[in-house]
Image (tube, rainbow, N blue to C red):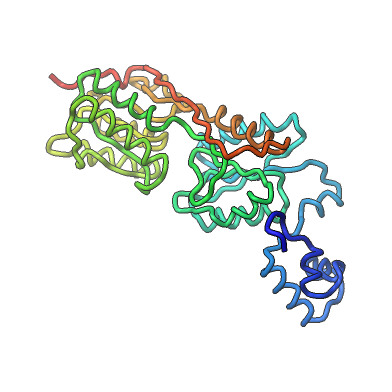
Length: 339
């Protein structure tokens, strides 16, 4: 088997010493095949890493559009929904269809979805990696020419195209904004695990801003919470410290929502807050929420442009595109510390 292309049904047939029609019968359960032959075929499929071309099969029964597979961590997170919308808008004019699956932030489900999309012979693969996944297993697909782009978080163990936000720079700007308004004890509410790329980059931006202002880093001011409820509990823990923060930096949209809920429950209107990611209705909160806004639609469109260029024959080295963030000042980040 040559390493520069995907194995085909013909390769499987040659390995076993049968016809491609026999292999097809085994894989599609279409017609009688001896048990021993079936076992040999399946062993060869596993050995060669053959993926049945389900897309071609679908086209024979009437499907006309090529597809791009997109894997995101959570369907319910509006950030990833907007990313998907950016991808779809960019590829629609090229007659491509977007297929979306959720990994639920687990490596096992991400790998399962990758296998499913590869079996469908998608034209390209887009992945927002789960927190613990690695991608060495995709090296063969990339070498074979399959366009693979990672969004929001880069690949682990694989050199591939990626599109990410300016996480570190954005966090640095958000925390510096709080420092400029007089705050010296600033809490950080981040995601889990601490090794997650976006969490790590945003935390480093938080540290950068403190260092540049000559402020000490206090580990007790750092809390974590993956979802809104956990982030609310994390915020309340910070507020009950013997020397609590006068301001908070929430490192993603769910952390921001949790912080808003916790401050409302505690009836605290004196704690400044800057969130990373904009939120729906952020302008009507009391006070309106100051945020470091990402551009998920632009991220999706940029990833789609990379895929389309690869499909059009671009074979240049893997690229990383960084989408800028911007600070939107609304009120919550401008509250002064207590006198």
